[in-house]
Length: 257
Image (cartoon, rainbow, N blue to C red):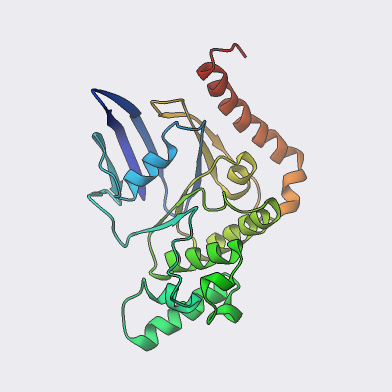
């Protein structure tokens, strides 16, 4: 049984007297502890699909299953990380992580410390979000999402607002955290190198209405470091993903490739 399964998903948005179909017959499945990235042209429905999987939007048709059970709203079985950090500015780093937790005060403090250590922020437990860099804020968001032990982690462009150097550091951190925690991850990104670097598979979507067009396995050794991006096999895989997305971009512009 798949850990996360999306079956025949359709999403239609009303637009005045007409409607727009964002997703049409979109299906995918993620195995337990698998890391999968979802890429495609802008507006193809990547974030919409992730939002439906998170239970934040309803599908027009189709279903989302976690361990075979239908998703009918948000749940603690799914952790969420978005491009915006969504931290509470009046809480410290540790308190932001503790906010998602249950249990006694001592238990919450212990779990928060464990996860701040996991993302390298133990020394900033008492700092407020305004005192943190963008990369540090996103590390807090990741620590918080992992702290209550979700079975699936859903990430929507988590590093999109970061500069290139910080983004690279965060990608390496994410792979190390995943290798330690080993949970199922679905990442939406527009960065092809990021998708190849972190993933076991990369799924490419068509133009709107979105559906899965290509599945590209990433059979690169783990653990991974950023030296890998210079390897010929990495460059070849990134090229395959880029070519698949590019063909959709050309089709949308009515240009022959």
